[in-house]
Image 1 (cartoon, one colour):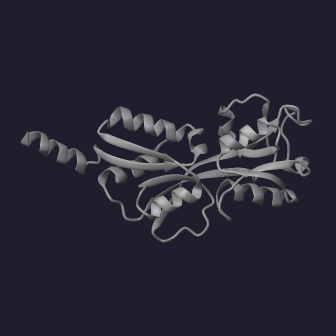
Image 2 (tube, helix red, strand yellow; image 1 turned 45 degrees about the vertical axis):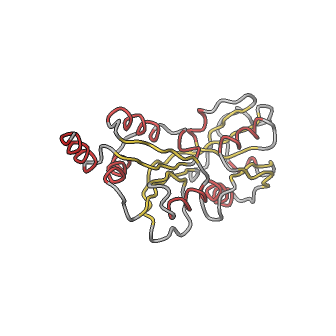
Image 3 (tube, rainbow, N blue to C red; image 1 turned 60 degrees about the horizontal axis):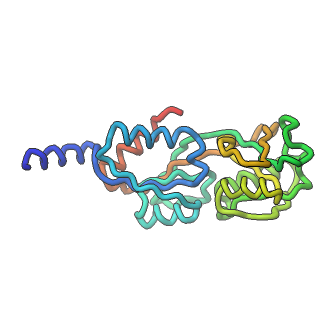
Length: 223
């Protein structure tokens, strides 16, 4: 029993066992990097107990500040993050368009945003200056128009579901193409600046060796 206690203490000190509270926006799971890291943690360090929380940007932000989460994967940009939080790049990816299958431009090849200036759009309901919603607004501004937003929604999966229902068109991460829904066609974008970045955000006060270990893995993990 004493030997086991010593081993447990050593594993804990090395970050090989303990509990990790990890939050993420839904679209973070479309890209291969985060799921790959979770598989590695479960395979190589079964002593690390993962508590996973999916949420929107605002909820994850608040949970980090309240120390209910250790790390969160949030879509940039982040508007004026407080000094208590550290923000690091995680994954950068291109964006694409999700169109209703009967849309006149569906499947015709790469499009520019301006070609959809008169369409109704579905956007994320992110806090002002934050996340994919801000990327969308900035991209439309560069393309020379203000989008007509028909619906704001809390996650990318629901955005694409509304596209499937014919509510409007949407700008989504390229990795969201993994979500195959009836009546949805994905078109590439010609706009050069249409990219989005996922950020790793964690509290400056790192509470355990497990958190420190996972931060290191997230920083060095390859796609």
